[in-house]
Length: 100
Image (cartoon, rainbow, N blue to C red; front, side, top):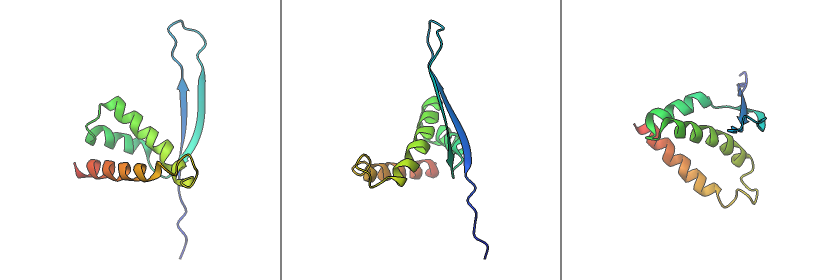
């Protein structure tokens, strides 16, 4: 049997500060890999979560950035207390999005 090779998707996130004075804005950028399709997650949240589209976009991206980090570091003191609540939140979110 040939082992299944994981095909992570690669993403680049860029955040740019918007200043009314047209000054040189601060920016930060980073890349990450994810097994999930972030665009698909955002579209599902926009269609089925009941959130405003911009909020759904922010939630979808935030969850895909935070979730894998928490899973990889679930025993770290920063995440240990929050992990059970995050798991419950994700199960509830998935049931609502899939149920509609």
